[in-house]
Length: 227
Image (cartoon, rainbow, N blue to C red):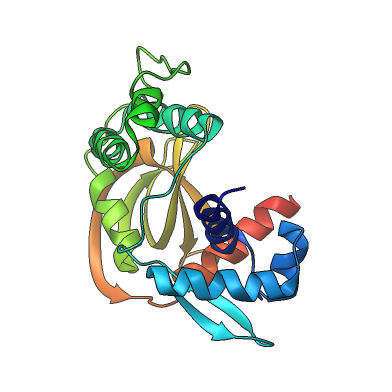
């Protein structure tokens, strides 16, 4: 394996490996000596990679835009094409525009042959009707998740009754045919799912629940996995 390919593979391994990222673990994954890992980490640092830590304590990669673009293999390029194609076909216009922008940005970083593989991939997604219809509150809900702000929603439940709910929106989940907001319901004092198509009104309360979104979402996803 050439030097640049070896360093790129080590860089990718550090991106995806769960902490603690030690030289011993990296060496075991790569099938090389710990001394080789120490040498390659120094080479990455000299190339512009921001890697915190030191020998015996572990490392942490901080992405640096000065690094050369990531090289994807053919199957990884197909995965990118399918993923972005799925997003474009979901029926969420904001995400569809974002997917088009991501495709252009990724293509611009690739060598010519890889760029052509991405733009003319063999994998395609076709959903003529889209999975979900547009919703007037979706962009505001997404913004409230990013900002970690409580919102009040007018919600129609399964029985057709309308209620007002104060929630802490954690994430938007795209299931097979339905978009739901994963949230902490202040009324029930518990986790709840709210279908986006049943949300009639939405307003922000001005109350922040930062920085609890990440921990609440982690707990909710763990609860869903157990169920």
